[in-house]
Length: 429
Image 1 (cartoon, rainbow, N blue to C red):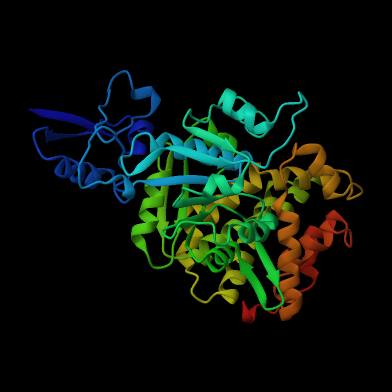
Image 2 (image 1 turned 180 degrees about the horizontal axis):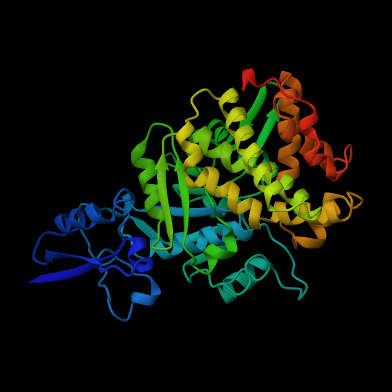
């Protein structure tokens, strides 16, 4: 008996193309069936069995992956995923992952999500409401996460059985979280960081992926991209980049876990480049917000974005010579910079800061505008400034330096277009 399966590339939907159809002999051994499926469903192929919603009526699919029981695929090889963090982006990440774990035989259906417990205005605990309603009513209201997402307020319990950890918390909390997890993870754990930011120590800047790798002794990839969470939550088309060091196989497993027809993920062998793109673009977004708040126009904003991209590249390559130029043309690079400068929370709060002439602090505006979410750009600007100051690079990065000085009140918001009076020595950049 033979079965035919339509397979979709994400662009089939957008260009009204017909799906590719494959035929598989159902009498083949289960292991052979899986190899046929994975040759098409591997991350590098970009094909998916699950079609976009608009195609479901005309091209139904049959999913055998979750029903094949191959004796060689023992339960011990099935990966269990825990998402450490439950804010806006953390909740969207859990939704993406949960939709795939139900379909892929190599993953356990259940996705644990560690939630920092909060009491809602109703008096209920946030974790209880998430588990009752299948919705993060505080940070992602109106979006169902998937019935296989389980909120857990106990960090130790949430990670106990996991061998794939997804970290997505404000970066300033990560050192404390890692210290709590030392000695409590399984031996085969791998991790991925969706966190924008870095730690600055006496010996120099410390990337979050490095912090995770060193403290927990695990392989840690990163995922960054042009990813405004609320748009992905309603399944609008988006891309992302997974950065990895040596192990391509681990990177492809992360790509498989996150990829959907509306969320296309590409692996790149450049952890530091991918991570620094995701970190530094928030500093440039503050500059773009200052421009918007002062109503300086699109030409000025475009100039700020171009200069910002140049400083992002130069700073990254000065810190890590291994950073690749090509990384800045991936989703994590120029695409993320564009979307963050047009619609991200850092831009929005910086716009309000400039409209108020810098008289209201970022802490005050964050509390008023973000409903508990954290603003990453201001703390990152401070950390970048510390690195520049310590290494004598301030004159090389006038935009980065000026953003920090505006943020702390040393300069007015209008200084964002006046920094050019201090000509940098670009020979080192």
